Amino acid sequence: MIRPEAMVLRGGRVRGYEMAMGHGLSPERQMRLLSQVHAAFLEGRRPPAQPRRVIRDSWTRVRRSGLNPVRGGVPVDGGDMTRARESDPAQHGGVALLAVSKVLSAQLDPLLSDGDLLLVLADRDARVLTRAGSRGITRGADELGFRAGCEWSEASVGTNAIGTTLVTGAPVHVHAAEHFCLSQHTWSCAAAPVRDPRTGQVLGAIDLSFPARAVHPSVVALATSLAAQAELVMRDAHRRSLSRLRDSVTAAPGGGTWALVDPWGWVADSGGVALPDRLALPAHPVGTAVVEGLGAVEAREVRGGWLLVTRPGTDDGAEGIRVRLEGARCEVGVVVAGHTWNHVLVGRRSAIVACLARHPEGLGALELAREVYGEGGSEVTVRSEIHRIRTAIPGLLDTRPYRLAAGVEVGTGTGSPGASR
Image (cartoon, rainbow, N blue to C red):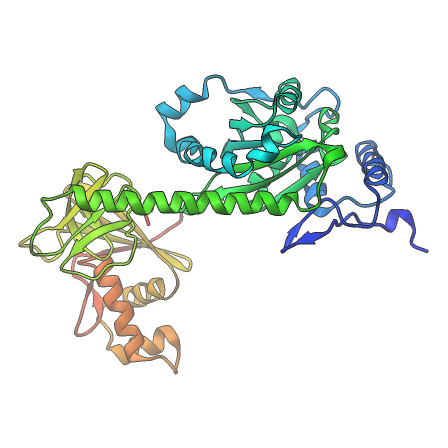
């Protein structure tokens, strides 16, 4: 016979996503057991069963923050979210998420219009952007403070699907007494993070909330599917924006090397060079800058992005280059037109630059390959990496033999690099 305290509430799994349900208990017995586990955790007693790891970790974080489980759970009201999004849309990710809210609401309309399901979109700071549901469920959400402008982070209201999924970066289902604060124990919620297809960063979360008595085992899979659909919608919108950028700029150079990119570095069009889909741009590419794949360029702002044109009549456009070696990486600062553009090299590229810094007299391809890759090092591989480094940072390396270019300063030290790449 298994001792009760040996039971671990692992939940079930649907397509790789962990649910709060699925360990053989009836819904009523599970809710009673979760309440007992929650009470034991708060009182420091041995629980009748172990909570799921994602829940235990969240409870631990929240308890350390000092949030009171009885009096806590009241969200911070962020005020007028419309004004905040308009003043700084990039900070909240609200504009992109709101653009897909109608699509998602339409998908769930039969469940939202006359049921116990609430669809919520929150930004990356866990503030509610919008919600959709029946009049009855939204009334209950209002009583809980689950409305637009309110912050549902773990720090604000304890363990909950929105706050916890933004901490873990993974889909999560929080059911009944798995919520840290008692005021939320009658609810069940599942959320999944939504990533910006332009940057890969988390924009926010999609949440499905409902009364705990109406829990469904596959709700976390549904939330994850909605998040994936939101990302697809945003990806399609991004493709269209690149097409508009390409069509709107008619003054692109007819010759030479150039690229037309959006604010995130995605290439809409280019000429004179083969480029990856995305370029690493400096933080503020105004005037002269150094861009990997293009070298020194003149950055001209256009509607919806930047036109990057290589500077004519110069080999690299660099007024000075400084290399700082730090552990397994090196930071290269390129001074162009009085501004410093920082590049961080890691892995083999860092090892190559560090090796050449130790050999100011220079090395041949085979010598460099053996220094960096060992006896099995290939000349072809090292030549390829050298070409990539010279393309990324013009003026850093010379050839025949391979060496740091004259005038490149080399130093060592620690510190926080201000890398744009």
